[in-house]
Length: 274
Image (tube, rainbow, N blue to C red; front, side, top):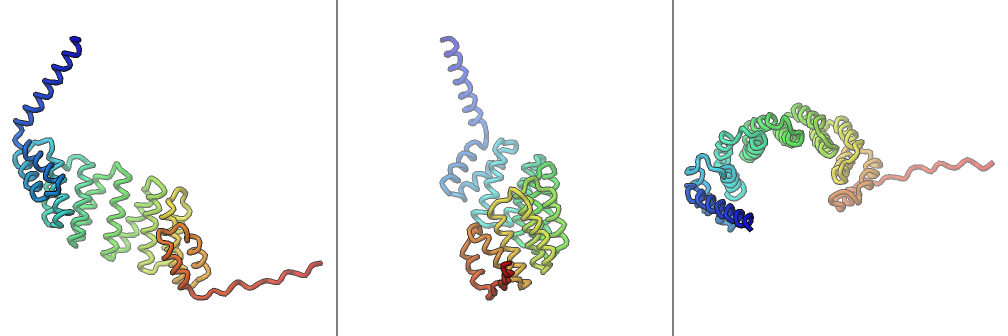
């Protein structure tokens, strides 16, 4: 009985201490109002309260939450990418000592710069991501894929190739490696480097443990290459092999229907029976 009474007293004391802390915290009401407004979809009100919280709580325990919500509102709700840049850069200065948090901030900043069309700044952000992803193959893989796509949009296929080959070499599982090889093959196909594209796809299709969808996408791209080379028989064979596994089977059916007539192979007469 004494033990139960003691536990009740301790619990009461803890609740009282938390209540006192909340009352003494200058931004407590701001963060509570911000959360309530955000949950109801009142994003402008939430934005004001999150901003106030950051102003009045320079050492507040919920600063990371406030920064995240403000950047989310700027990008996803308001589409204000210029403001998002300012927020993310300020957030990086404050929270960038944590590698995982720093990577997430720079990754988002890279995407924001890409949306703004500032590709050099986007690449710069993703280069910082690579530094913060040194101990994480998964984050490194995601960063390299993003960088390769940016290099491709910039027309720098040498850097596309180098980045995706590094991506493939450093991937820790078959599906990640396959994704890098697929992007590499696709990039080679954009510049009509068919042999290089085939080489990348052949490597991909030899991998074990690749998802059915990724495998089907690779076969579809390989069929494109053979069709470009006018090897319609091989194209037909490849397309037929993914009729039930390609994400959109009707696309495969349409491609098969549009192929030129392929004459059947000549029938070789059987040798006369002895």
